[in-house]
Length: 127
Image (cartoon, rainbow, N blue to C red; front, side, top):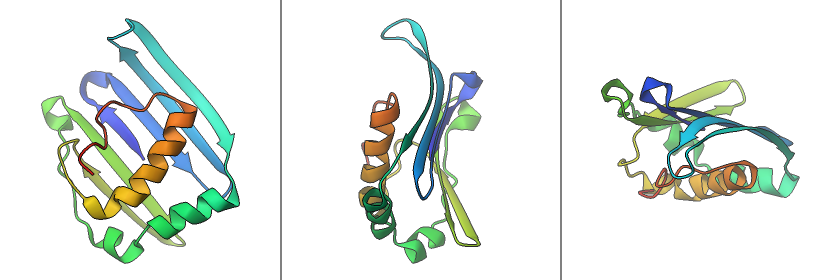
């Protein structure tokens, strides 16, 4: 999961696998007038991985065909890529999109992201 903003203003990436979460962030914080750079890794428990898996409805997610981001107009895109065995699916959307069925999953990812770095304000408010 990640966020990518035009003009290279922001590129964040959270990768979660069976035993670790890895967050890379690089952006300018207007509120603190500083550059934020994070490259953090943290072990995650089997319980947390199981909660992520149970929050995902693979059939629903793999049926989504979102590519509605704002990057071409200097906005920000949010992307979510999930690998399920040999299967892989990605959606790209903007902060105004609403996909309520993904809320349990995005809440879990938000929690992991917030422990490792700075979660972008409003990124998943509509979910």
